[in-house]
Length: 338
Ligand SMILES: NC(=O)c1ccc[n+]([C@@H]2O[C@H](COP(=O)([O-])OP(=O)(O)OC[C@H]3O[C@@H](n4cnc5c(N)ncnc54)[C@H](OP(=O)(O)O)[C@@H]3O)[C@@H](O)[C@H]2O)c1
View 1 (cartoon, helix red, strand yellow):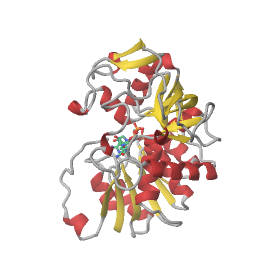
View 2 (cartoon, helix red, strand yellow; view 1 turned 90 degrees about the horizontal axis):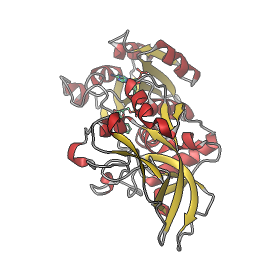
View 3 (cartoon, helix red, strand yellow; view 1 turned 30 degrees about the vertical axis):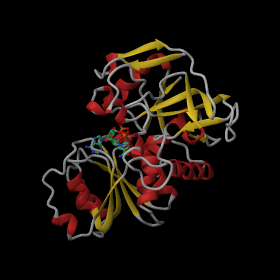
View 4 (cartoon, helix red, strand yellow; view 1 turned 180 degrees about the vertical axis):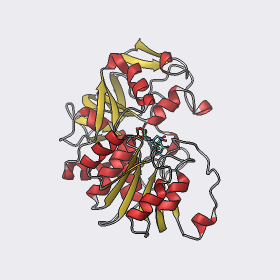
């Protein structure tokens, strides 16, 4: 089979195409032909070696997210059969409930090989059936970007109809958060550095739009939109440079879904009483479990929700796909067909 391998964590130039032996499924195993993969910001970090010792240093097959179809099943497999369309879970061993240290290290494409290859062997608990209305590229966006947004908005946020949600930027996680908030009957404030992207977010259902580049004090604008009450939930993706504005925008008792660190990974000069005295809930989010993935897929199928795929690169242009997501030009998710 063909695979793309990160020879060493030295950026896109270290990605090389390789011919590897076709894997064979053993007892209880399922062979999947990967049809599409999706990129996340984490994959760019891994490409550059940002996970240091926590990632495979040589010949890593990158990417955590993929969808495809079953081409062979080993003895003992009952849940899947040849021809089934399937999507892989982000964590192979986080099945349900709270994670532990071991399950938190069971993500694909970091300390062990991921999805940027033609064939991969899984166990049944690694896979869900792909919602039938989705293409393989759309399905490939579900394991990380989709489930992270689901966990923030639905799982942890428990967003109710009529509530007000603020999303940051227009990347993969953010647009899923917008879509899930709408699905839950909430009103959405979308932020972006680009007016063109804001116009697209409006088409997806965002009721209020803020250009965070033109309005560095966007937290106050969000507060005004909420008539001074504060927003119920912020999908916090920026980190250091956005947290102050998020705290300005949030209502007392509201939740910050602590997900990303796009602008820095420390609390900066945040005054803790701002959080304590207003009972702000800062809820860390780390993707989600296989059980939550199945629940999310059921909701996506019922509501016929379509993930936003900006562009699907052909397999031969895998490097270009990484460079495209690095550029920040994308709106939503970036995929690679296999
Ligand atoms: N905790 C978890 O489980 C988890 C899971 C997935 C992702 N993440 C993290 O979440 C973040 C987003 O991931 P992603 O895959 O959605 O990334 P992505 O698709 O690459 O999103 C990038 C977008 O974020 C926006 N952005 C960049 N800097 C910003 C800032 N200072 N303020 C507001 N928006 C900003 C930009 O949107 P505009 O162009 O519209 O301005 C940019 O296009 C990353 O930090 C990632 O590591 C965490």
